[in-house]
Structures are given as structure tokens and as C-alpha cells.
Length: 298
Image (cartoon, rainbow, N blue to C red; front, side, top):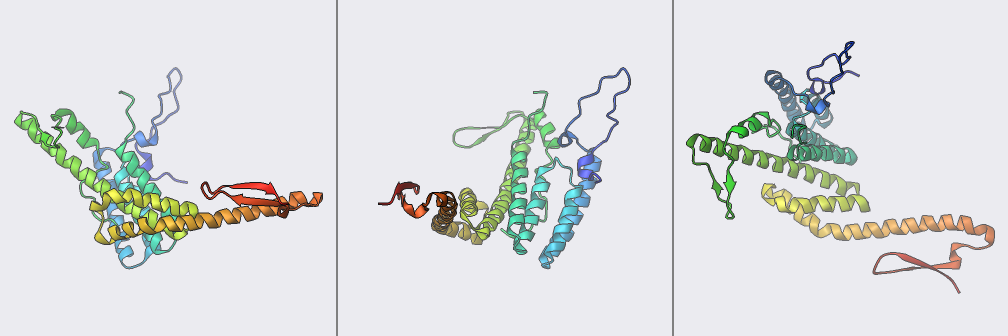
């Protein structure tokens, strides 16, 4: 299977020559494309994404998924934000197709990419709308990181007021850094909210004790992000937070009952040779813990 361009980077002969020590191989995630090639790959990916967005708008969801996948193949695998956007868009397509499991999987991958973006590894030396524009492209951190080494670091006092450096040039750089950081955080928060909404809805539709519990946890995570949600999405979150606990309790009771039924059937198989059955025993539920105790009848 050929390797996509987003994973290949600059390939080199890894076989050591006689008398030479083999260099330590870098993981694929550490390989970076030259800026010009990275920009070309992103332009190619964005063109595919725009086509996929139009397919989504015209309700051609299966075709949109295929084109989003092509867009993903062009994105360098270290640009986590772009990957998160595309994965979230694919999740939206699966929701429209009522493919709940696939929607959960893709939304989870989107959230994992954002997690990696917000907590990058240390170096060895020390709703249902699809996303269109990239805005500040938070995933491309190289230029910003280099810039920060030369800019004075802004600080905040206890009141949240930003304190800038006295030097005018450094002050301008620090202010630009603050603005970029704010845009980056807002973009990440927005995509995270969309991915959580999509995963929560898919889990709710899947049903079952575990899925409903997972949906509730996603909606609870969304609650503090209400400022990033559309009014209709905020309403969905509030409604789910009120209704899901009862649904979870009912699903738990049903699944526990089914489990006890299967255990009883299994127990009868073991007890039958001894002239006994599970009817010879009584099962008493502890209403406080939800557990059961077993005793002999009569």
C-alpha cells in the first residue's frame, strides 16, 4: 500500500554503510516538510475540502466522505488542527447517514488530534455544519514558536490585565503573539465543541447504558463551552443534561435485568444434574447499591 504524502516527508536511505553508525530514525510525526511544500500540500487539501463541503451542502454525504479522505491524504500528519477539522466534518457526514458508530469514531479522532495540538510532545533537547475556512491555522506552530523566542513574554496580573514589555518593538511582537494565541484558542475551542456535539449525538442515537453515559459526559464537557455554541446547540445540551440521567438509569436497569437472566440460564445448566435450579435460590436486590445477594428459598 503506497504511503500518502502527508506521511512521507523527505525519505532517505536508512541502510548504514560499512564503518558507519546508523542514525536514530525519527518518528513520522517528527518529519517536517519544507515551508513551500507544506503550503502546496495545504492548498491541495483545502481545494479538496472545498469540493467536499459543496457535496455536503447538496446532501451527497457518501461522496463528501471520499473527498474529505482525499483532503486528509494531502495534509502533513503534524498539522493536527487541519486533521481535526476534516475528521469532524467526516463525522458530520456519518451523522447524516445515520452511521452512528462511524460518527463516534471520526469525532473521537478529531478530539484526539486537538488533544495532541494542545499538549505537543516535548523535544529531546529539553453541531452539523462542516468547517470551511482555516482562519489562523492553529496547527501550523513552527513560525509562531520561532517568533516567541525573540518576543518579550507577556504576563497577566491577578485581574487578568496583560502586561507588555517596555521595549516598543518587543511590545508589538508580544501583542501580536497574544492575538495569535487568542485566535488559536478560539479556533480549537470551536472545533472541539463541534466534535463533542457530533459524538454526543451519535452516542445518544446508539443507545445503551455505556453509550448514553458517554453522551452525558460529552454534554457535561460542552456545558462550560456554551459561549462557542449556536443557540440551538446550547438548547440541545441543556435538554440532554436534564433528560439523559433518567434514560441512563432505565438502560442500566434493563441491561442488568438481561444480565441476570443470562446468569440464571447459565446457573440452571450447572444445577440441573444436582436436581436443583436457580428457583431454589432467591435473589434480593440492594436498592442502595443496585447489587444482588443470593440466599436459599425455604
